[in-house]
Image 1: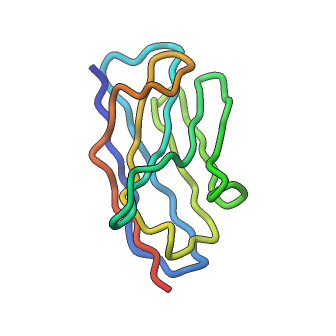
Image 2: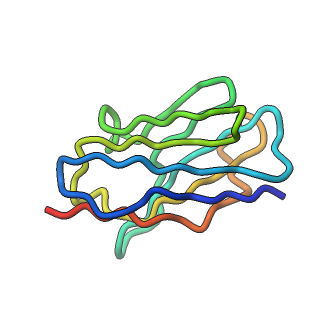
Length: 118
């Protein structure tokens, strides 16, 4: 089992920045993929970005150039730096974990709310 705890959400004005974090604990595999997804009001959950233990990253087109995903492997912690935020970025942001270099996320966090005001 892997437990994921997100933090750092909040309210920010459009154009502002925010950083959310995810701490993983439990049975962490040496090679894994961690990701951020989000679910806005009245919308389906969507992919935001992922990062592997090898440092490979991938972003959704909607956040490319504005968001930066990173991780501190020694602390099993992942971050999402969000800049130039837009009201449409308002969502609950979820951390996800997959064993290996995979997008089959078996574990999810409870989410952290990010609200961007116009």
